[in-house]
Amino acid sequence: MTLCRTTRRSQKRSWETGDWTIFPDVYTEDGVYIEHSFGEFRGRKAIADFLVRCQALPARHGVPARLEGVQLRGGLAGHGGRNRLVIPEKPGVHFDLIN
Image (cartoon, rainbow, N blue to C red):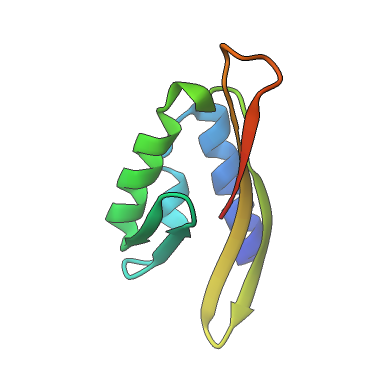
């Protein structure tokens, strides 16, 4: 299975189950996750801790993120995505975060 397919399946499974400890498994122990709104997280554990905390926010419920793609270069892999934060108390109000 390709890295891109593995990453997408892992992300989809996390959305479907609500278990955000699944998705960080695609990162290596020395992986780096850059979230332009929240900062940089180094290492699988730090990435997992951030994702679990972030996805627990009430504004996240039921809103799928979209994986934009995976790039491979010189043994390194990276992906970007778009997360939509919806404010349940304010219909029609949302924020798109690109990471």
